[in-house]
Image (cartoon, rainbow, N blue to C red):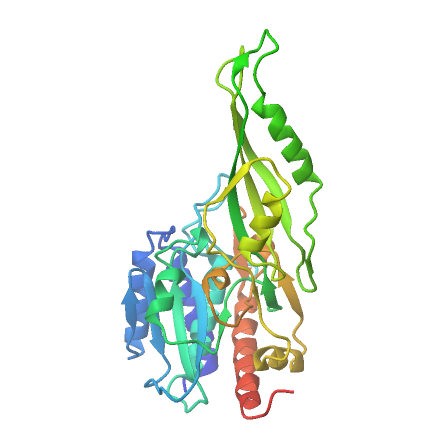
Length: 361
């Protein structure tokens, strides 16, 4: 086992290396190279698919369950509000500034240090570390492409900035393109059926819409109209009006169920762009949740999306940093958040491993 304090220092240096290397979604090859080189320095064999890098803590034992530690190394584009160079890691007043420092570089290096802490040890599991790509766009070359490559997972820990609180449920996302049909006519005469007015009934219904079921962890689903388009010229009654819905779906619904309930209450033809970004919820009696509770870690339901949506196995979301800083100008994470995150990840896993040897209550 490597010295823990040394691993923490290396984690900070690795994060600095990642910050100074642009890694926008679908263009993470250079940060993938850095992560893979770091593993090679540790004499740990890695697998690679595209810009996804993964490794096991020791030789794989098919008789043991597989636990995955995952975070992503892609970032969004830096916004116009930056006053600092987003690709220059600046450490000042206990903060480490830089694009991706908080979302989710701090989680990534913390989970990697945690993984290295257990490397070579005899554990009651196969411990798997995965640095995934394309998380920020839920891309098909990221987690979705990895699931067929990996063995069945007993559970996964997804690293996202949650202030080391454990998200035991997460809302899924469904984007819907809606189309309302009317009949074209001349605006000066009483002709046609105005598709804008037809859509207006839908939009009012959407504004006040409440789904029938609610989740004890995540509350109700949320539907929001975000884009609307209609008409081509001022004197023509439009025959088509399209709008877009952003639907955040809780674990109380399958995406198909939420779609059906909306369709029953709207005039428009609804076409989801995909049915792949599912909600998630891990049972309260799962040993990973029990481990968190025994350590007095706060649990909650998360409204934000992560790679959890693409993992078809029990999972939780937890990590150092604060979600409120994600995608913000002059993004930063506190260095101490990373140090504490590593220690708490290790303690969580040690407690989890001990519970695996006991019956679930």
